[in-house]
Length: 190
Image (tube, rainbow, N blue to C red):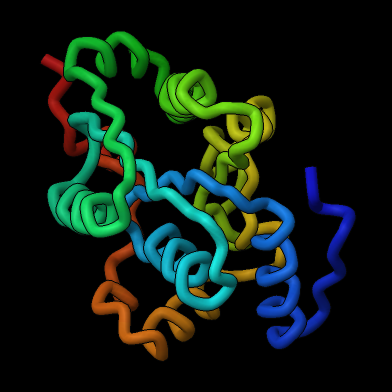
């Protein structure tokens, strides 16, 4: 884990810290959900830190169509990877327990990625400091599997991400923050 290598106490230091951390993590496979956090981090890695990065999209039935479209666009333009999960597989993973559903899902998705990546690759996601482990129990799975969250480690919060994404010209800078169809109660299990 890289959390102890950087100290962040201002927004300027957050940029410097993220650049330094990116260089230490490279090469990276970045889980790209299609939300602004991972889209911004992909942009940052590729165009600002200029490190080797490959976006990865977990294509499963709980993803909103807007996020799916944005993620697939990023993945296809950057020679990324799409990892497919069937409806039946994910319904079994999600199960009946809402308390552990997010954890089980995140664990299942990233375990597959861990198996696909060789030891030289660092797995990352777009979690940031405003993401609460109480509200996002899947964060525990990331920790267990050694997935790095550079935005979180370097003190980036949602407002900083949105501002940086807007300044970079990313069209999704003001995209609605959402979890997934399952967490939001909009996915039919039957």
